[in-house]
Length: 413
Ligand code: AMP
Ligand code: MG
Image 1 (cartoon, rainbow, N blue to C red):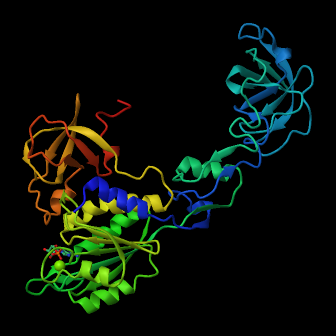
Image 2 (image 1 turned 120 degrees about the horizontal axis):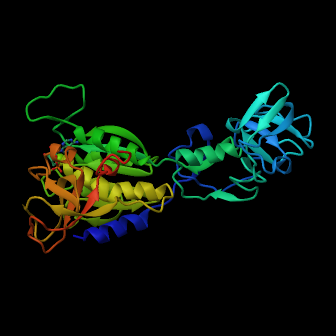
């Protein structure tokens, strides 16, 4: 049996990065960048107007104000997407739209609100500084500058940046391909009818959703009966996957063959059993760059093991540095007894209070009660040696991805 920390270390040290692939920028959001992105040109590529107004020479307008306006001759219009055909000379102005290139001769833009047009004259009531409302070329990005580095999970603004420099495709890490094998004679696929003693194969669906959330591509390979031959065949058929997740059959029951089969197939076992609750029977092997997780069958255990070990491994395989669930200090609203010899992860809801986050257990902590995980916002950590999390105790908790909902009040109120 290993500690949680040692199990995490063993898993992370076995991770092999997935190869890179080229994808259209339209599909790059959320993917992990596998290249440096360097701008081949200035963004914006040319000096342009930040306002709808008039392109002017600032020296013509010294002293202009609402009480002492200055009149200029309007010699034309520059819309966005066109270059002006004429230069702005002394005493002249060009009507200009936002984003249009600044014409020759002009060095400032006066916004339309500070002007009044009278026939072919424009009355200007403001003395602009040189460069006022002019966006210089390269203000956003300079040619040759590196704007994004490998390992970045691309956000919308990053995708916009890549598009703004004109790249049609970008290299990203391939999504890890994840096989999901559910073992158990009692399991029935969705759509089937339950006979005596049977239950639906919920783990496969939960794990497939979890894999997708992290950015992997799951394949549900169906239900494997509790027979060594069937399991051997199932595991042997997974060679085209990066990660193999099985559920069930890793405990000490008479039909728990997974560990034995993994050993028989020569998969290099890194550990069996972690000093944790839920999820103690977890087994992990690695072979030829493939990761094999023998997850426990209990639905909560398999998902908690996914959160602790599989999700960080998938993220690291995709080249991310920050891969672990964020942890925060919480305050216990209710006491809960915990396993003294194990790291226990207690499913809790979170409520925001003035002085921090209040954690309340979501009811029975049985590893078969999936609803208690569905209701939970976090997993509160009770370290080994502790028998209780008392009311008012301030343990650490792993956030289960709800951090977006935890804001105390509407920030715009
Ligand atoms: P096992 O680890 O195979 O002993 O399974 C432990 C518990 O989890 C048993 O109650 C199983 O019926 C249940 N279980 C195993 N696999 C699944 C699954 N794929 N979906 C839902 N429950 C499961
Ligand atoms: Mg079983």
